[in-house]
Image (cartoon, rainbow, N blue to C red; front, top):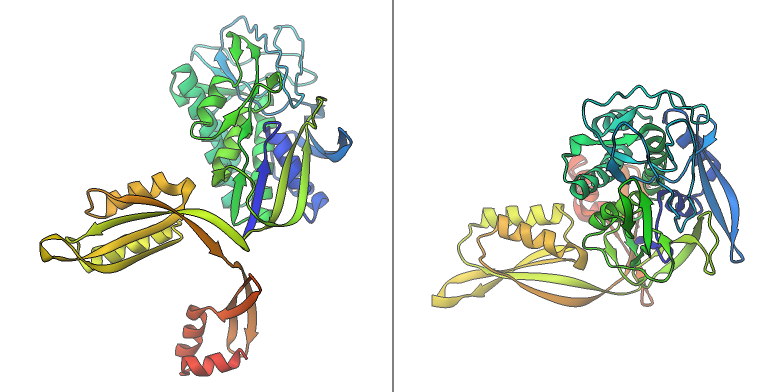
Length: 443
């Protein structure tokens, strides 16, 4: 199984994640060209070599209309007419930018503003050539992303990530999502980071994404609200359910953008699994610490080892075969590892079935809810099992009757290959052959 493991020992920011994933890409210059031609207004993304604690990696820079901006941070704060944003973050990844101009408006990040609707948006800021900053609502961000020259998958992933951020800001400030506004220049920076990571995930196409517990940093961060604790409220909300830790580095290491990207793509958080490593990528921050300020990404294959999975089991004696089959198929479509039934005898001599759903531990809550929704059970049992599996991959074989997918499995000293049944059955039906005759074509 093609697996991507993201190590967040120095937190996570969107640009650092993008840089780490870029190092895993076969065509880095081609990727950057596609990202720069995607249509993000005024944005140009570049990648440079960087050295931290003797380790060489990649640093990503995002410029808006020729001026390098900060890291796509989305801290939300009250926005009134005096524009005094004392936002002087000392981030672990080193994006502590101060831009002074006539409104004393320190924009180094993609600030999400809580707007009052009588606000005049036509500010004539002198911000390094960026005139007349507007403030982008979630609706504006959605319109922008939907208009980019990227795939539908990238658009959907990016919009999901942005909604996680907007919902977190909404929760942190107790205002509707519709009242959350992103400062335009910073928002373009964040859009670049998010779109870049989503494009790289599509190109790398890992079957499983896992991440380490997230180092969020420690201490406090200054913004217009005053002094806020680290992690910032929005970041903490996004990371709900994710293992985090801090205290070792003073500063904000994980941004809302980085947190949302991890939350969306990672299927679980914990130790690195047993995997056959192919590539390692280093995404560098700007600041220097006694430890390397980077996000690491490991790409490899997981399979010749074991993993712990959950089995969700219940007894059912009052469902029709059609309803049971519907529930089985739906759970498989939702990503269950397997769903099966076993005939069993139940109380009062009734025949019934033992209904079992196998899933990853990070998916337990999802499948518990689905089982209760689509079966009649009143309770279920959860057990954790250790699963050993062969490494699997798919190849396509050309035949006189068309392509046939071949499933290969290897590990533990064995190797085997089997044709995809649906492909064989299609050839047999269309050519009046038996399955055995089709099988002979593949030998």
